[in-house]
Image (cartoon, rainbow, N blue to C red; front, top):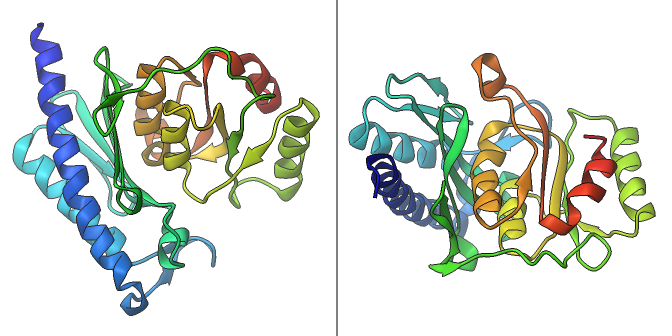
Length: 265
C-alpha cells in the first residue's frame, strides 16, 4: 500500500466516524425540531437553524484536531484555508427544508479535496441508518457493502434525480424537465442533492442533475459515484470557483450521453 493510499484510508475512517457523530447530533435536533428557531438566508426557501451551525462546528473541530494543517470549507462558516494540500468540504445538514418540516430526506455530507479532486466522500443519512463512504481508488460502500453500478440502466428504464433553486429561472427548470421527459426519462426530487447523488452511487437513481449547486452539496456524492463506476461533470475547485456554484451532473454509465444532452453539458 502506498503512503498516499494509507493516508486516504486514515482520513476516510475519520470522515466516517465524524459523519456518524454529526449525524447523531443532527438526529437529536431533528427529533425536537419544533424547538428550533428557523432563520432565512437568501429567501424564505433558503433556511438555516442552530442544528446546521452546531453540527458544522462539531465537524470542523474534529478535523482541526486530527489534521490541523488541512483546510475546511463549510456551508455555514465558509473557507478556512490550510497548508497540507487537503481541504475538507462540509454540508452539516443538506436538505434543511425537509429537516425542519419533519421529512427524513436530509444528510450530512463530507468530502475531501486533494489537488482539486474529491478523494474522499462520506454521506450519512441518519433517518435511514445509512452511511455511504468512498475514497479514490478504494471503491464505494453503503453500510460496508460494495457499490457497483449496472451499465444496463438508462434514463428510460430507471429514474433520474433533479434539483432546482432560485439561482435559476422557472423557465430553465421547466425546460430541463421537459427535455428529460421527451427523452423517455422520469424524475424525482427529494430536497437533498447530496442524498440523491448518494442514491446514484447506490444504483437507486441513474443520474442526478442540478443546474446550480455548491461544492459542499456535491463533492462527496461525486466521489461516491466515481468509485461506484459512474461519471461526473467536473466542478471548478480552484480559487474562487470552490466557493461559488456550478452545474452538477452525475450519471451511471448507461445514462451519461442522454443526461449530458438534457443538461446541455
